[in-house]
Amino acid sequence: MFEKVAGLPGHVLVVHAVVVFVPLLALLAVAYGVLPRWRDRLGWAVAALAVVTPVVAWVATESGEAFERVLRDGGYPPEILSQVETHAAYGDRLLWTSLALAVAAIALLLATSGRARARALPSWLPVVLTVVVVGLAVLATIYVYLTGETGARAVWDGVV
Figure (cartoon, rainbow, N blue to C red):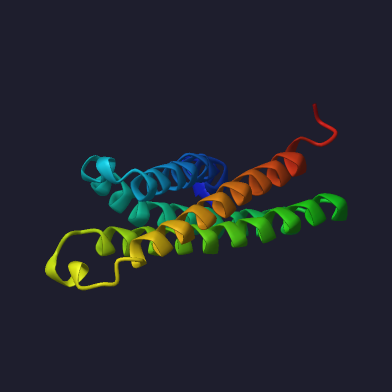
């Protein structure tokens, strides 16, 4: 299911969505947390990205595993497969970090929703959630870079 899309390796296509959605979720979730006056404008975008981003990251991980099996079965040299394993390890961390960022962003959205239950929460909770969102956003962005860099090196080392 994850191997090919229109005859192309699915992973090659899906990773571009991850490279866009993870930093976008990171940026908008941080803006939502630190700029309260923008919350009305950003809330729906943050909520949508918090749902879509982990799904896209999961699809990228699954398609990457399928692609890695194809490479192993194709007899690729151990040095390339080693680079692919490093890339896959960063990809796994990116999946879990993007999921954690999405959960934290949704928690922040709920804590600042203005509903009766949200107003009953401690006043410090949105501040703590914002700090968590900022930390996870930085971490997710770092993992986007590391995952992309190691993937590109596995593909292009010695080619360009």
